[in-house]
Image (tube, rainbow, N blue to C red; front, side, top):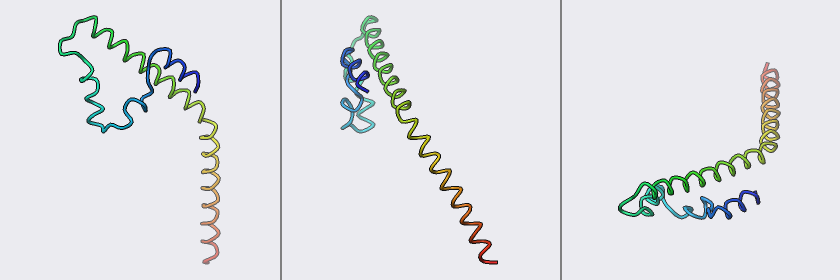
Length: 100
């Protein structure tokens, strides 16, 4: 997690939470349009595109790291849910047999 934060800091990127956490979905869509000048040149568009690509890459790395970090917890919970499901099925069978 620290690696991602330091990488984002070095690249001059803010986390998505810091930049858009207070905004409604409509406002989020308007952010890129407000930042652009009224008349764009090709170098400006390419620069903006590269900045968005860097941000997307940083977010993708963070998501991938979080998935890998949380994967053991996910497996553990999935095993717990499977065990609970098996216990419930056994309880249903016992209840059915008890009514006979």
